[in-house]
Amino acid sequence: MRTRVLTVVLAFAVLAVAGFAVPLLGVTATQRTEQLVAARTADLDRFAGLAEQAAVSGDTGALTAEVTRYTELYGEAVVVVDARRAPVAQTGGMRAADPAVARLLDAALRNQRVSPGGTLRPWSRDAKLLARPVGTGTRVSGAVVLRASVRAAADDITLRWALVLAGASLFAVACLLLARAATRWVVRPLHRLDHAVGALAAGLPAEHAREGGPPELRKLATGFNRMADAVSTALEQQRRLVADTSHQLRNPLAALRLRIDSLQPRLPEAATRTYTGVTAELERMEHLLDDLLALAHAEHRAGELAVTDEREPWCDATAVAETQTRLWHPVAEQAGIHLEFSPGPAVRTICTEGELAQLADILLDNAIKYAGSGAHVRTRCFAEGTEAVFEVRDDGPGLAEGELPQAGVRFWRSERHREVRGSGLGLAIAEQLVAGRGGRVEFAAAEPHGLRVRVLLPRAEHGAPASKGRTT
Image 1 (cartoon, rainbow, N blue to C red):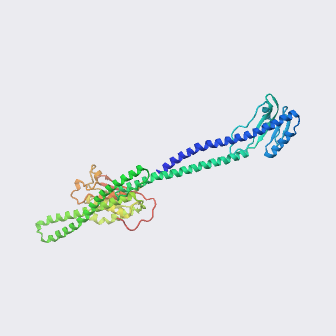
Image 2 (image 1 turned 30 degrees about the horizontal axis):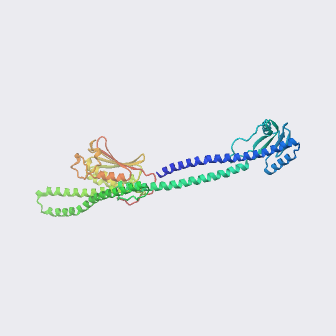
Image 3 (image 1 turned 90 degrees about the horizontal axis):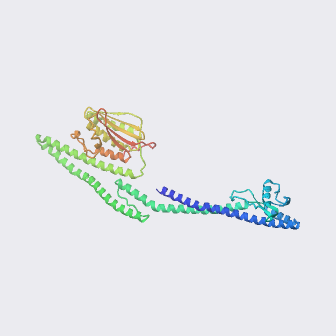
């Protein structure tokens, strides 16, 4: 935003400077040109007066001496002729027979004054020719032509233009500095507010936006800080409730399990079924607490990754997927599942080994639990455009078409799988882990039947070797 504002302000400043400087440059050049023409016209008038006196008296000595001194002093050539075009005085290498001079003499003998056209510029170097008739009215007794040097005038114009451009540049720099200060004054509070909004949206502790800038922004920052405090307090209370409840329930559950286990030897055979049901429910509650803690941690981690500039790690997704598939083989065999991994080329993904291993564990656990005995579960990892894909496919009963959009909803479980133990939080945890890395989880029906789950994460083009330790 600051760059765009500075660009607009600078464009207006350049246009303003150009609108002021360009006409001033033109006026300066025109003024100096007129000064040169006026000065040389006065010299021509003096020579014309001397030539008229010489024509009356017949003595050209004074005229010749004046013209010679003028040429020696200023280095500018002068030609004076009489009414019959006979040269009276010629200096500086210019002759009456020169084509350009002859044309001017003809015009002057017709009683026409000739002044040079155009305006001088710093790069002008060609001399200007001026002509004036000798005499007045219809009594033209001769003509005078003067070749004026423009070098001095062009140098003056160069100096004046340099001063004008220097002043315009200083003005433009001043405008730029003022614009930078003004935009910083306005934009910096917006950046701080944007960062605070991002942190709040990610569920991180509220970060107050420092007040500054115009009164409207200060008022906005004050209102945001009040809102952030309220939202952050509510989120923290909710997170703490989940965490504290999970932790606090562990001890009573552990004590309850010890007491129930101690009762087992004293229970009659008729109570065995009831005892088994109670212990199963205890295990289910313990798994639920573990999943709630894992979900809270995944949400918090996803929020941190969304607003921090943490250096993106990478890992070989193919190697991690193969390792986790191998670790789940004993569990799959015990459940009567045929688990296999389809090898492929290495695929780098923006994710830690620990995060990807946790994702693989969640998907494999779900596939093994719900595919059913005798089913086949296949995993593979491959690249698809700019994304790395980890896929788990089974040929079990799968989900109905209307159930697929709900697969990642917290605590949701398909009616056909109610008898299988689970909390309904596994896929929700996976989605939070993937969202923190800018990825997503897709659910689709497999052909001819079954479920296909794909985890898509951004590919890492370059990177350093991944850390050996896993972060969970």
